[in-house]
Image (cartoon, rainbow, N blue to C red):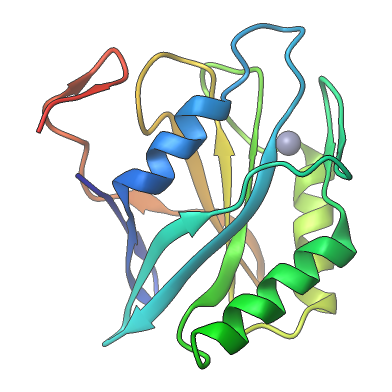
Length: 171
Ligand SMILES: [Zn+2]
């Protein structure tokens, strides 16, 4: 089961279940859990973007209750490696991290950092997808946004997972 979003001007965004499950497994269960995060990978075809794999925290990332700083060198290595391995098909889509919030929303620092990352990065797409993961027991408790030259904006969900409750996936 995937979640679908609509990116204005760019089309459909699909987040595969395997990615949703990784977010769920790393969510901040309590205030004292540290933030987690990583990179979103996926592919683009016929105007549709699909996130089908995400990286998880590495030992070099600096994690805290209120922040998550990715090890930028390792992240770039992963992106380059994946790009070469897939002959340019499996690409960097954006970033994800967790918050200790039931209704996840980016902080002003998140927005600043995403815009900075967008300005400084050479991207395969002309935008980045940024996801903040909430801490409830439901799969897909996410804030999903799009970062481009105009700024950061939340994008609309087109569907909710059916058959998923209390974080269980019934298929
Ligand atoms: Zn944040």
